[in-house]
Length: 384
Length: 178
Image (spheres, each protein chain N blue to C red):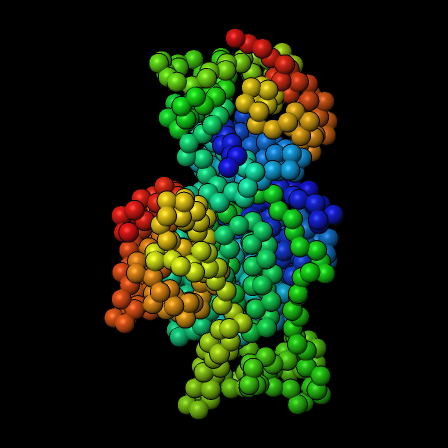
């Protein structure tokens, strides 16, 4: 891949390449990983690009240590990331929990492939949607973003790094194999169009510093290790200084902050795309590459006079409950199209209530191929 | 709606994915259209079945895969056998006539044979067979303009092989055949 200095000129870029380029723009300066199909190009490109920016790339012995290394680098002050696929994502879960409880910003890219286990290495699947949410144990909140194009892979990578730094939390970027390996012509945004969020640094004397300070907006200054500010980091439940505690008020305070910093900021975190929903009687709910097939199906069905629209979550976690609620109240039929055995379906079902009166329809594929627009069209014909 | 869907098939090592990359780049960067390019391969790097596909369109491409092809480029018998069924009626079949020898009879497609690998061997490098057939496809199936293809090839192959590749492309472009 040739880096094009004139950003306004179109480039033929792969999803994985777009993620690496965006990570560099978002000031990611540390990557630790263990290359795995279909995410390998991210590691490959980062190993080539990071040294040019005085960043560090390490190929680790496995994914457990990769996750550990990016947590360490992030605590020391570098924006950090890793990239993997299902089997590696499973190995990262323990340390993702560490990043949650210790409130360490980092980006984990998971290019999904068919599972369980090593499954289908080069085939698309959306089987890790629930793993992204609940892969690590214990109550925790997580942010996961889900692009549907090469350009959006670029944009959401930057957004993922920003959200991670802002809310001091690991952020997962979920990607379909098709998007990761697909090349599209894109015009990348100019540097000045990008909003890159930097960590808020403390401007108080070190002796006043509190690492886990409560604040109404949950955005608190964070010192890096080695800057003269003393603090403790542990994976145990801890007090505001980071020391282990079992005091019930301190534990609850910590647990509430971990949740509320995400759920009190849904307006900032959640993004959805609503396509031809204004007068829609049938709605398709789909993410990633399936939403592309769905969009084509919507356009063709509209030409046949069928009032159908599409809701596509760009933020998959936290789940866009409010937007789904509105969709369920508005449309009489909902088609949940996904490349798994019903992970999004169960979430929609959770939001559904008697009052919404809409009927839910499953459209699933989990054989290593993606849903085509024809398949979605025939489902539309079936339910209308 | 102006859309052209091209499927390229063969073995790993024949430059199947690079071919789609060259077409995608020619169409999107130099011809100013929209293109999306995808690939499919198994765990093997060389020798295994490999295919790639490009959707070229005047509007944005939503569904990026090729379920029905307007043109099929086949560089192996296996690739032909596997993807012939998705070639649409009156679609253009471009194939290496030395490597694809068992053709289905009574089919309503437009066959365009070329001994691409033999031509490449005569040029001194077997690996430019894909570029020979891309030249042929440029003339016969209008997948992109010859100028755009040439620019794209220049940008996509190793510097020291640019001349060889352009020569291979030109031969394919001018090949008359049947």
